[in-house]
Figure 1 (cartoon, rainbow, N blue to C red):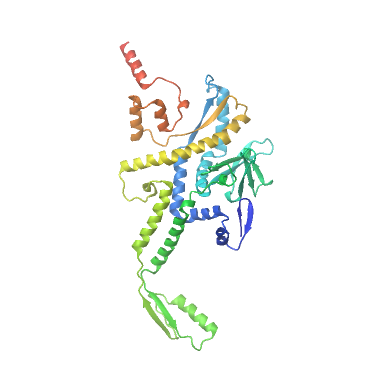
Figure 2 (figure 1 turned 180 degrees about the horizontal axis):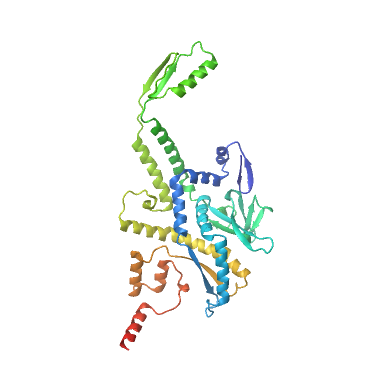
Length: 398
């Protein structure tokens, strides 16, 4: 079989041999994702929370005196919105979150039409075949080497390149770090324990039986046939008739299932804790008060999801929206911003408390919209609730 790592081909007789040499790590993590249920649920949960509320695009004028409601600016926004729907950007971002955490990076190739170079779709690239290219003089990311590309190289202008924990601009660091790497030991332990539990559950109701067969006078073929028959037919509770001398020894088999199950649960806790997800969201918490659950969800959003959304927002604006605006000829006038819709519902207790605090002046408008998840400059300037109340009182007096 052949696996690719860093754009190079490595051949081996087995997957284990390749992975033992350190190649094809994205293939390994993909196998973990498919076979470890709690890991898959954690990654899917993060992707779901990050993208489930959807997003909107807004217009920001570079000149503060300019009007973002101009028809020409709105036309640019509508073209970009149509393109987002065409490439199915909601789904792209959801898959991006899973691949970022799983492989350390998620890369999409911008595929264009040959006739007019218009964008047609975003194609996913296999992380095992990617080598980032960094300019030696400037230290800037310029593109990737990709084994499946016709020329072997794809420029950054043709990519959407997302990483996870890339802390410097180097070809190695830009591959990112898989979120599974720190819990790889726990995943392996969990898989071994589950294998032991499967064996224990299959043999729990019956003891182990050791058979001794007298094969004197038998040819090698007859002896092999006898052993095959014993393995197939001698099962607990079965009635067997045989014309050979067979003796058996019964060994009581009492596996410690409670400790085995607790050990598996402990590995699940380590995996879940690595992603900071409340256990109740994964159906791992038997009982939890409503107030405690709401607090856990808010903490999960503020500590993990908000940072994930911020990264995706800035990356999309730089790699996707700005080039599109430039191609339409408005890069010197406007920017298109990616705005996540609030995850918290308006009727939630937290939202009601924020509204009351804002109405009585306990929090500023900037703090209010920051908590909700909106950008302040997308809100039109208008009178504060206190000023509106005074204005309403004056109208009533008149």
